[in-house]
Length: 279
Image 1 (tube, rainbow, N blue to C red):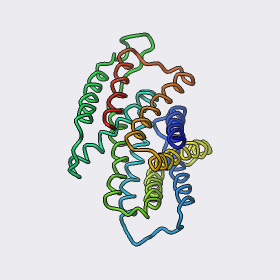
Image 2: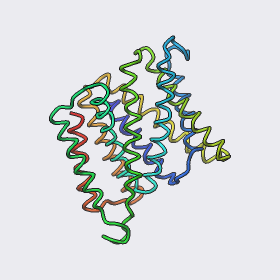
Image 3: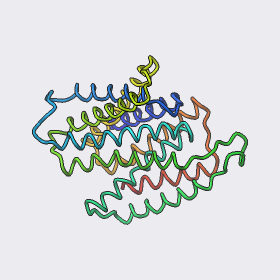
Image 4: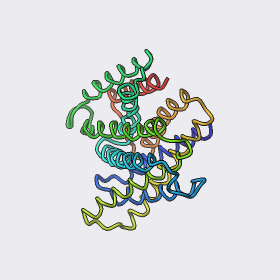
């Protein structure tokens, strides 16, 4: 249980740091983040080797690295546009993507309860799309950017799906190596963007990159550790709901970020959907 609670805290810190960063262009921060994660991943390898004879960690890590960069950029953009609470909710709702891939690619079938969770998630999305537009509703209401939320959902789900693919195609001895290659390639892809835009890495990028990288790496490793001690049906819904609640509380106390009644109703429906999807 301790690992699960720590994983929730690490993931919540990641969302809050992105909120405080509050910029739509932060590839310098993302690059330092991935360098930090790669260094930590390599340091935790039991065998300090980058090749075990199986190419799967290498090429699948490259694909996953691209998804990780896209997910982090999308979440940062959505937090900037929609706030930390809704963005974290939709990022956690990305669990819909691996469920769909499991059905389409691996021929797995959801239970009746999971089917109800999918239906509730769709209804929640409809409710969310009915939010007041800018200039309507209560004073100070923010504009709603559904595309940013969808990107956060899809890309976070795609990055989560890579682990499912690796469990099917990779070997358990290469788990740590796979994580290392994810962050290595994510960093290389980000470096290409930095060189293309000719943007120098600033001291601010170094500080925020390390602040993002540490919880980013720890949330992945701690969640894996939690899964070795607790059943998955307890870990996943608890982790998803826990992160949302922690981010909501921190956003209220740190940024005075509030949700309207319809938003609260949609968040409640999504929380219920997350629980059903993970049962």
